[in-house]
Image 1 (cartoon, one colour):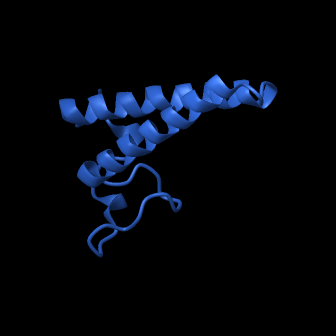
Image 2: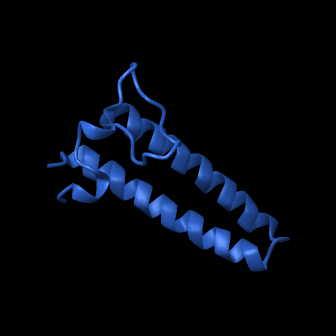
Image 3: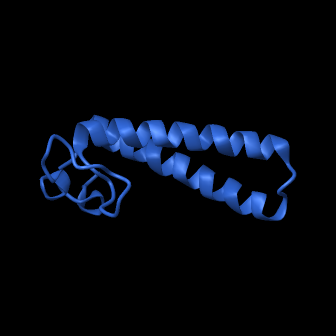
Length: 87
């Protein structure tokens, strides 16, 4: 079971991911919109910071190359999978 801080961090990652996807879709049709591009880049930076912080505490979120092995150990199997966490 996830603790409160873990659930809070996952929620923030989900929210930032949603915003990034929406901005990505918007930019597909409005590639010249500099304000949207700046917001996308800012959102992406915040998302990556949140993901790195989460992974440093709770382990990897994905298993296909975005998350490095930590401390010479494969931590992916140590904790519940992100979709197994009960909120």
